[in-house]
Amino acid sequence: MNMPSAAPQLDMHKHFTSSILLWMRTDQPRQTGMDYWKGPHSGIISATPGLEEYRQIHLAEHNPGRWPTTTGVQTSIPTDRKIDGIAEVTFRSALAPTQGRKQTNLAHQDEINVFHRTLLYAGPPNSSRWYHVAGPDEKVGARALVYLRRRDEAAAGDLRKLIKKQLAPALAGTGALKELRTQTFLPWIEKLWDTPNVAHDNPHDQHFHASLILGFTDTKARDTFFTSNTIHDLSNQLTPLVSAIHAYDVTATLTYVKNGNILPHHQE
Image (cartoon, rainbow, N blue to C red; front, side, top):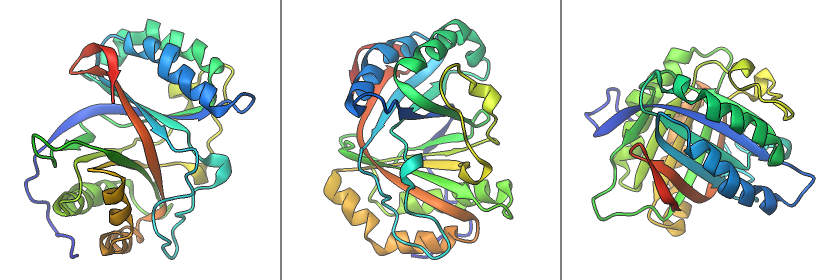
């Protein structure tokens, strides 16, 4: 597959999204933490004013790394840094985060009940892009979440340009995806989410700089995608700029706020 040098006009919308990477407490069963996050903790986040959407992305407990082995790129997910889930929070406007300070403080205080490490990755407004790659009757039955780490010698702007002009069009052009979302992050700063009583250790060589959410018809389609020639071609394009590609299997994606409205019950 030859990736285009210029992006075709893709049907997509730009958003203002932050992602919080979450690790469950290890002094209790993992499922206990996942259930608490899904239940009581979700209610705190959902009540935050100014949200356009709030999703929880639950990752499989066994996640060695979906991306195929690529020379010079870390594709195996280190056990001690393997993420348990992602809180994907999309705001209605650039000023919306200032409206939810009370609820955010409640979320900070509640983290100790479920998490042992949390890391916030944020991008500027309009840096999150949701591509319309599914037909009106097509549903997502399986997902993968991919994190990208930029090489130290690579420029941040080059990675953003690659994702926008080459990677996203190539992924959309496969016809295999029923969901495609991309995020590019500002440099990680602990003070943006320096919550009490939980860890925020994030060495420089562990930082991420972009993410992809890939949706498929079902797990078979996901398996086929990650063993296809498409992935190998994408790896060749990413290798000059990217030092790590961590691809996770998603077990559940739960939506609690949609189109600015709190749902009476989460949607899967």
